[in-house]
Structures are given as structure tokens and as C-alpha cells.
Image 1 (tube, each protein chain N blue to C red):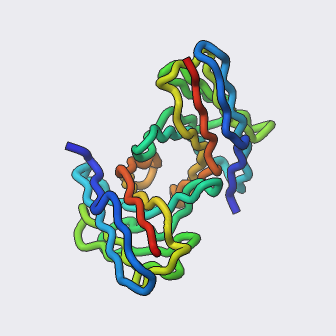
Image 2 (cartoon, rainbow over the protein chains, first blue to last red):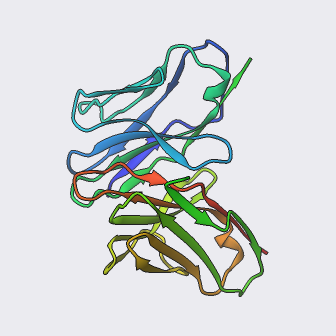
Amino acid sequence: GDSVTQMEGPVTLSEEAFLTINCTYTATGYPSLFWYVQYPGEGLQLLLKATKADDKGSNKGFEATYRKETTSFHLEKGSVQVSDSAVYFCALSDRNDYKLSFGAGTTVTVRA
Amino acid sequence: DADVTQTPRNRITKTGKRIMLECSQTKGHDRMYWYRQDPGLGLRLIYYSFDVKDINKGEISDGYSVSRQAQAKFSLSLESAIPNQTALYFCATSAGQGANEQFFGPGTRLTVL
């Protein structure tokens, strides 16, 4: 079945550092790919998405590119802020039934 | 007002008790989902519903049941709670076929003693 593997955390960074969180997937078809973010005490919210190969999703300074050849969707941000401290989830959606499969989540802490 | 609401936000109960978690949405979406979140495991799908008359089991449905009372309401029940059902529970909605973004509620933290 479909699955998502993302790098384990926790990740601790200083402000203005570069952030990358690796995500790879296994899917039988051509899924849509997502990054969700969960701020402390809140539910998940969509950060960015990509629906086909070579698409780049971007939002709030974060970017991720759908790489079919490496089955990856790595999340990057060039200069993190304390407000980026959160748990980040990579997910994929099967095109047949649109259910989401989530990775385990990566906790990111940014220190001033 | 929040588009997806969950009640209660926190609940502590004892082993063997029946518990109901409720979810309401004002987004007008047909599809609703229940997930549980455990540290290191991400979110796992418990049940989902594509419309009022359609209920489907997810990957971890044992020990849970659901009711779709209306398009806007989807409840999750634990008939006889056990300690390993201690988790953070999320409700989510999506618009329908072709629109695969899901919108999440704030979560219910359930502790079973």
C-alpha cells in the first residue's frame, strides 16, 4: 500500500538557519503530495502541495518539489524563524479514493 | 468561528467507559474523517465517510464506531475505552472527488486511565 517516510526528529535550529526535512514515498499510482504543519496546541493545516511530477509547492518561504524519479518531496526553507517551530507532516493522497497517508512527523524547534 | 470544531477538547475517562467525540463543520464538505495521532506514528485513519449514507473503515477501526448524523456532523465512539486508546484525535473534512486537501479540527486529547 501507499506509505510515506520522513526524516526523524527532533530537529533544533538557530534562527536564520537553513531547514530541510526529507520525505520519500511509496505509491502504486501518481499521488498528490502534501506538507502539513501542526503548531503547538493546534490541528494540522496545509502548508503546501504538489499534484504532479516536477511541480513545486511553496508557501510562507517553504518549498518542496515533487520528484517522481526519486519518489521524494523534501521540504526546505532558507531562513527559519522562531515562529516556524512546529511539527511537520509529509502526506500523500491516492488519486482513486483521496485518502491521506501521513509520515510520522518531524518536530522542529527554532531557537532565537 | 472555526470551520471544523471538535468537542470535547480534553477528556479523561476510565477503562470500560463509553466515550463519544463529536465533530461539526460549516464548510459544506461531503467528506469527513477521523484520525488518531500518536507520538512517532503520525496520523492514522480510523473511519471516513464520503456522504451521509457512506461509512468506511480506515486502517485502525477496531474498538471504534462512528455515526454520520448529518452532512455537517460526524461522531466517533469508543464503546469500551481501554488505555491504549489514549491519544490525540482529529476530525477532518474535504470537499469531494478531485479536491483532496483536508481541513482539520483542533483535536481532542483523550486519556483513558
